[in-house]
Every structure is written in C-alpha cells, then in structure tokens.
Image (tube, rainbow, N blue to C red):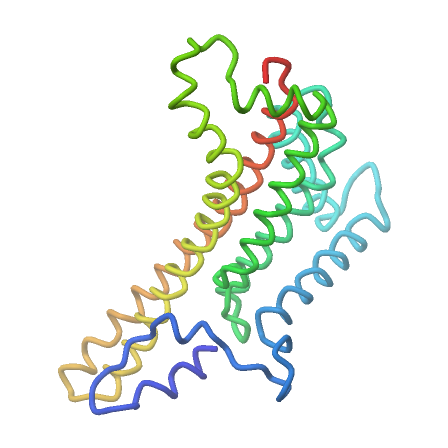
Length: 263
C-alpha cells in the first residue's frame, strides 16, 4: 500500500502527508463495495490461521517440531495466562473464543508491517466494533446464563453493599459502563492504536521518499526518516502484539466478572 500512497505525494508542489482519507481504500472489484483490501485481509487471516494450526498439529509428537512448538506455545499462553488465571475453574468453556479472538486480532495487526500487504485490518473501525460487539454479547450472555436475567440486571443496577441514596448517582454510571463504555472503549483502543501506528509509519516512509527526491540537503536528511521508519516498525510490532493481548485480556476479565458470585 505504500506504493499506492506514494503516488499521492506529488498532488501539489509540497509534501502532502497521509491522512484519514488514505485508509478509505477503493474496492478492487468495481461496483462491489465489499470487495476491499481490509475485507480481503480479514479472510486471508482466517485462511492463514487455519492452515498454520492444521499443519502444526497434523503430526503432533511428544518431542514437538518447531511448528508444533510455536502452535502449542500460543495456545498454552491463551489457555493458561488469559483463560485459567483470569476466569478460573470454568475457563475451558471460553478458551476457544479467547484463542480465536487473540489469533485473529494479532494476525490482522501484523498485516500492517508485512511487505506487500502493509495495512492493519483493525485500523478500520468497523472491524474493531464488530469484535467489541461480539465480546459484549458473550459476557452478558454468560452473566445472564449464570445468574439469571433478573439477578444479573439487579446486580448491575444496584450494586450490593452500597447505601441506597448513592444509587441515584451510581446506577446510571453502572448502566452506562456495562452497556456503552465497555464495548466502546475496548473497540476504540484497538482501532486507535492500529490507526495511529500505521499513520506514523506512512508519514516517515513517504516523508523519506519525498526528501530523497528533493535538493541535496533534503537527500542527506532522507536516511534519517527511513531509519526512524524502521525503528517505528519494530515498535509497531510490539504495539500490535500488545493490543491483541489487551483486547483478549479485557474480554477474559469481563467474562470473569460476569461469572463472579458476588456480581
């Protein structure tokens, strides 16, 4: 995608930095609004994840191969650190969802730094909103199933052990937290980090290319921009992994809260 963006550098006499409009990619099939690069990448991620874990588990052995070890390590991390340690004794019911969520997010985030792809799917807010909505329905369904609708709603609206006059202030806050703030913030956090990180990479890469085409002084400054772009790529990789972890961690925490006896 950097090649596509680079073509826009010369729109006028000066440097035209990338902006939010550069994330609105046109469909690659004319007349089909759903045939866009982000949707294609989302389907590609599902294929890559499926193929990877099928291959890594196809010839499982006591002494694992490197591929098997990589697959098992990722699964064990989600199962133990994000499932068992957060949710507790009922964690195995939710490991498939947590594992799917984590791998889907992290692969789509990595697309932002993979050559020839170079677009993080989660930088389109609709994808983050859908994942947030799924998590929203999952933890509410778990809470209603575990406690019953009326007790679950009562504990949200009227937190136990709180003086009754406080409910005038606390009840609207709790209602907004459970119905709006949680799904909104978990989605916006993922989207904003992927959007901002990719925008920074574009600025330094396109800025370096622009300087390279300028006068001698500008040409001498261009390597600095490229070096910073490379450094930011490694930093962006860490952010991509961290955001997948945080999204999955918060999902596990919400499910654990819905299952808690004191809810």
